[in-house]
Image (cartoon, rainbow, N blue to C red; front, side):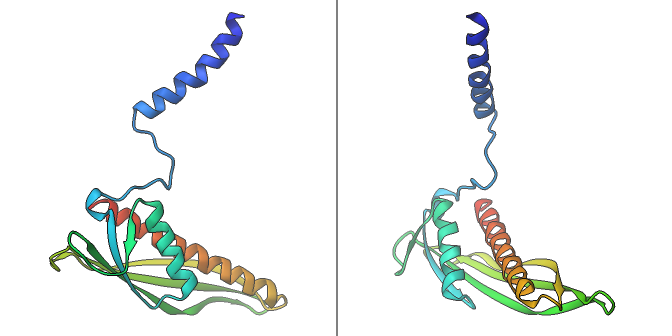
Length: 164
């Protein structure tokens, strides 16, 4: 009976110990209280990208508003696309390595309109293999790689904002 009790107590003690030392799961970044309400301005985003960024900001604890008001910070975000670059061409194999790159430029102004964070550029790159014999799969791989790039950029933005 004591053995069973010890088996149940060990995970409980471990959980309490990890919570007490400040352990947090990855991806659970919270924005500071002054960024609890944000007016978001975007350019270069399509609807899906804008919704993904909004969801990420909400998950970090921010409420997004359309109109500025007292105590509301304004976050301006611009997504820039760079043309794909072919890095390696495999004539015999029919596959190529292509580099995708996306940049995100952001700035933050406080409620008085003063610049809190000047234009800052975040860059992410990803290489992926294009198979000329299977272009349909390559297109899907490219779309997945772009989604990963955007997610990484948004996470990087949230980490930067959390340090303010």
